[in-house]
Length: 250
Image (cartoon, rainbow, N blue to C red; front, top):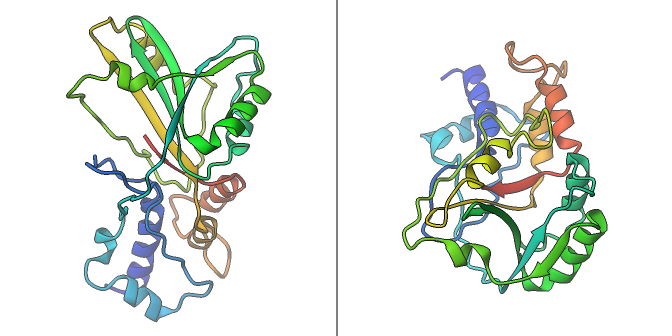
């Protein structure tokens, strides 16, 4: 493999690793994949080391077992039409959360109803309550038993999702309900013998993915995209890293 081909493969791998894995694990795993910092001025020996053997494929989605045990609390919420339920407000709410441990947001459909809850580490409960009420003052929030445990069947069918394209690109929505419109319609029509759950866990990324993204998205010498077919890659990355980077799992 020529040097330029090796360099291209490294860039492609770095663009792919943030898409995540759609594998279902039988044990808890860390949300953030294995991070390998790219040096500011990588030389040929760096690319030779990174592309030896089959490292291109083997190391893409390495997730480690999570041995931490959390004491959980369940916050049931009822949104209000009177609040500003915009994407900007939701973003500000998420950024205000402590996220010292992962937080889970769950949408549950059962018996013609759609209900919502946060699952959080118990020590974070008060501040999450406070921030939620600050951003959504007309919504209800209260402690209750686990909504999923109440309705989940003994042998549920589970499916994991990952990003359709590279994490280098911002997630763009046409409207605040675009992601949920079909989901709410489906979950709201389930009867009392059916259950549907959408769950997303998230926590701020702890590694400097922004620096890796910035470096591989442009040539060192002219700052242009390394791909002729993605000329706006540097601009897309700059837009993405202007926001806080989270490690989610759905």
